[in-house]
Length: 49
Image 1 (cartoon, rainbow, N blue to C red):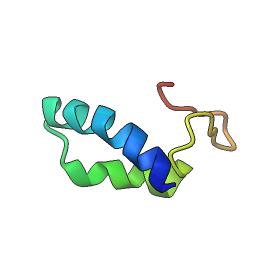
Image 2 (cartoon, helix red, strand yellow; image 1 turned 45 degrees about the vertical axis):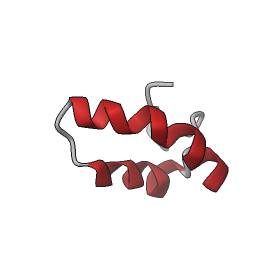
Image 3 (cartoon, one colour; image 1 turned 60 degrees about the vertical axis):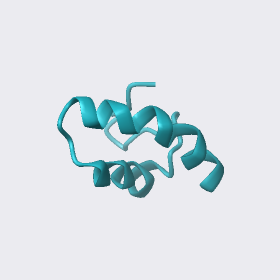
Image 4 (cartoon, rainbow, N blue to C red; image 1 turned 30 degrees about the horizontal axis):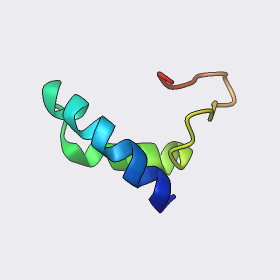
């Protein structure tokens, strides 16, 4: 997970800042999907990637 954080956080942080979203929200992605870009919810919801 640390490798994924090092890969994705630099991409995510400017997007959050640009949209006025607190930086702490990036940790929600870790909790929800372990930063897996292919993760899907049981309802089929997926992220942007």
